[in-house]
Image (tube, rainbow, N blue to C red; front, side):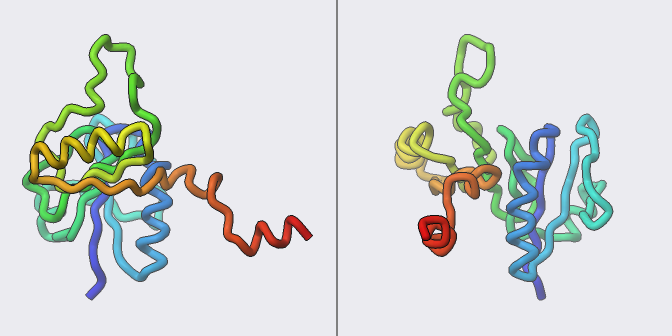
Length: 156
């Protein structure tokens, strides 16, 4: 049986962030479904599976739920993964930067780099119930990493 993954979308910017991850999951032969909050525009294509109810999510029974936002339903099955999506420090106009607030929703934080990983590693030690992994930002990683073979061909 294929592994199943759920993408939780509460804001429209999640679609281009999650699609590279979806492509990799599909490449490995596993399955992806999307749960989109009613307040968010549905931007799925016809080959992408949308689950519309809590019961459908429960029946789908994902092993992990990826969320590019600050929250996710804690009653969804699977490991809850906060997928960082850019350089979020002071991203809002509010006086208080809430980027490093631990809200208790996630089991794993996938950080994008030096601007957040060290602080989240400190928070991991302090709280002790989640893990932090620096994974990069899948939406732009391919702009910064080129296979060695491509670099060799360019230099010849």
